[in-house]
Image (tube, rainbow, N blue to C red; front, side, top):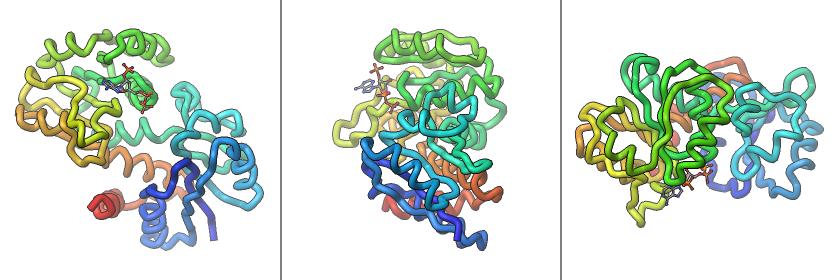
Length: 275
Ligand code: ATR
């Protein structure tokens, strides 16, 4: 039996094991995916131990996505640029790190936004780790122009400047972006602000959004953030972070097994867990 897993702290609520174990069963692969609770102080020992016991590949989640990088044997160029690894694959006896978060997001976006991304005006909200993975991946896939809006303008500017792939675009304060929102076909929300449903806050007001614009939020719990609810009221089309989560898993699964899992089944499993 081939062993896989996910390391993180905390890890108990991860939905990846259900998703991957179901895909193994569906495809008749003799594999098993186990969650491992690994504290930061034990990260190096865990990575070496996984090799020793014959684990074939694993996912990496908070807080280890960056700290794991020096412990791996090779790192894919896009993951290196992003500065975070969420998928590790045993290749030639060593560990190779990849980032499927950005690619998973972009795949889900391409599927639902309608038409080629390359023609669209894109606004990215936020400038943290999740924003970096998405911005660099979009740029690496030759999306022409991406503007960034963030509460702290300097962080947006340093994200744009640090990107190793060429992409046009400007950086904006939240207020500027709110005023110019009608210019955008696609708005991508990457901040953590919508994760607290009780606070019911959105990173910006969508009063000026273009009807028919596409708004994608990386959050899927809550299933519809305040931003998505408001955007829908204004006539926008919306997407939550479920597709991104499912696709980052599916892309990891493909790297480990060479097989493509059933995306709809994976999404149903997560939806069911969310209740
Ligand atoms: P992650 O790795 O999850 O992306 P992060 O690196 O801490 O997290 O980045 C969080 C992002 O959410 C940043 O863009 C942050 O804005 P600042 O750069 O101004 O800090 C944004 N963010 C977090 N809380 C926010 C809030 N209450 N209002 C607006 N933006 C917020």
